[in-house]
Image 1: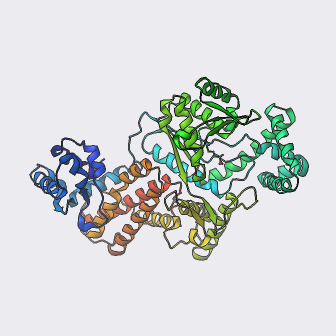
Image 2: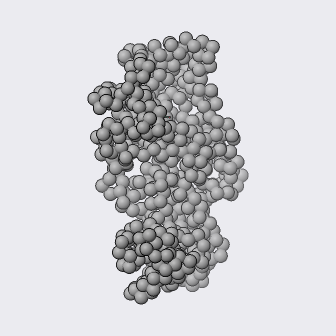
Image 3: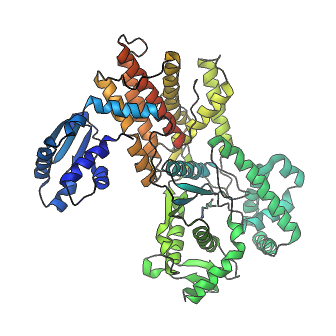
Length: 568
Ligand code: ARG
């Protein structure tokens, strides 16, 4: 693939022995203002290594590159300005990028950094029998996007849905079911019936704390595989999974493994015995803990005083199982920032157990979601089901289509892609650690910086190329104005954005970038006639630019789980 950033880095490496080309490439930036060139090297990053002041480094590098053979074929000019070395790309170079995109539209932006390497991504991971609410949307779309970014980089990815299918909440649910529900009701209302009785349990337990004892007793019966309780538990899981899958289909989330917490039920004993052998366990008021004071953390609880395991114990067992099964290069966990301490604690316990791969465990936290300012909690019944949100988004989108474009073909499918896309894009439009406030008017504002706006721009590009019905001649390209150059400059950034989003585990890098692409495209399209261009070469080039924009938007949107209908 033609990459002028890498070419610049390779030229620089000839002069700077101490830094390899790939590192220099990472130092090169795409300046926000094109007066500063297409690429800029902030030379302060080299001053320690080269033991010189940045302006001097920039001057020296400029003098060197000006005399390098072939350099001026790629870059028409370089400038040394206040410690920055600014590179100006020659139009011919832009054409090479354009050629590249048009000749490999599906793979443009991808790389092979992860070839032969495995990564595990634990995401979505809802709790069975509790509703799949909007908080889980974040884990699902952030996790799926991180997985897509790694796949696009050649990694073998194992997406794990670490279902919360074990724990005391099942005792509560069984008690609640037997008291207040029936087979018929659960069959009819599915997860909604389960949620209602779960919420009712907590309300009634406030007045009648004995219920908690009943729930504990029910859970220990389940742990002993009581036939009736075990069958109920299995049934609750089936109902929940069937429901989750409807939502996963809408998002396009796919998992390679569905092993939930219950799978580790018989694998925690060996964790406990290893901890005991290594003298890491301390008895504390009947419970077994691993002390972490030396690391500035509260202890990690391993066994409760009644001898039962907890979330962390099962997570330790799961990490060991995954390392043995997949030999991962990284194991990534995507959950709300509220669980950061839990991950820090159990990662530390794994390290103390002597596993050097503890450093390969990565927690990817994200901020909380509120709906129009209200916090969400399953226990208090203050929940908004994800399915309802998507349904509402689809209905609202259909209303907009009916108003603006009533004769659109496949209206329902388009409304699904756009409505769901709007919700996902909104979720991914800021850094993941920021809290999200879900306000309908913002999510579905088709004019603003939203998913529908990007999807619409894609559909527009696809419409133009369809109408042109022209096979681009990649040997007949010529850029004639600033708008064209600007657009190609933006498209050229895509491969670097993929790497940045992947390494920072930050899908919002892609969503923000796609908005830039739309902006560049719209400026270009406003000023440059495409189908009406008079000169054949200019027309051929502009059609190539539109096709290239469509490819980048399509590849980028699919990385962040959005579909690209051709007609909107
Ligand atoms: N079930 C948990 C929840 O909904 C998330 C599980 C995340 N994964 C893990 N291995 N702990 O909060």
